[in-house]
Image 1 (tube, rainbow, N blue to C red):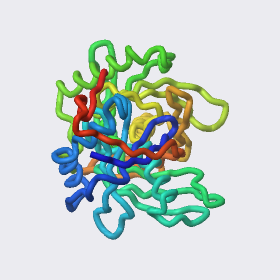
Image 2: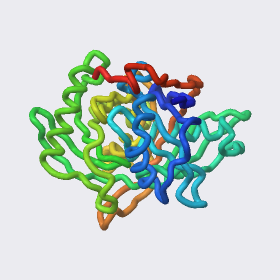
Image 3: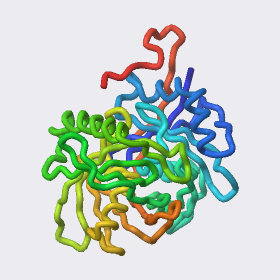
Image 4: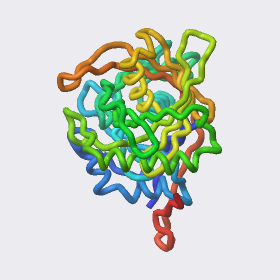
Length: 325
């Protein structure tokens, strides 16, 4: 097996884009293509995510055709436990790659494109200056609050949807690298507890389900007019997001808008555990199955880190690899 990939990082979070060695994914919708990948391409996911070619915190995608002529490309995201329904940092990296690779023609000062993700179609704007991509912002699918005031052991959580379901847990002063082992275990505990208590299912699409991630967050203050918070998101099977988590940022915006902590028009400066930043805001109202929701916009930048050709030799006793966490 030989698979080609191009790697980016978005605010420190890796994103591995499959560019060769895999045939086009069949299916009418991105959810169809996602099911096909889970059934037929999981060895490729394992090869690219697992050690020794990857690691427990690797993230990546298969690039697909869009669902119809209104889209520019589609995407099936993957991680250490399978296939996610949304990935904001991946959307930013994929849009950057699309222009830098020539998949989509770049125009200055902005290039508009539409990316079909499992959660829905995402309008994307890429800032281009001097022929180079300078930044990306995308409008996410409608985000909404699913539940508040939930208790799981010692933890108090709220759940919101931002392309996937995220639990938010305030942890003042705790968003530091030294706390990661504890937060990984706490994230797993909170996810198990919330899923044991009820089913988390999007009211319009049953495949958008379950608690995907747990966002631990804290207030940061700030001297400007923006609201500044720091977070670390534990998702999938104890995977840690190095970026501020794009779809998780949308989920946070739904909660902040509901509580009034973020005024309409105000920017959320969302910091990661490594100090990188997304800027995000609520740009409008929406409706999901008769319930209130918000339209959010998240902005960040991605950078190329490498080109790879991964090989699995027939006699390799480790096969597609292993994970230690």
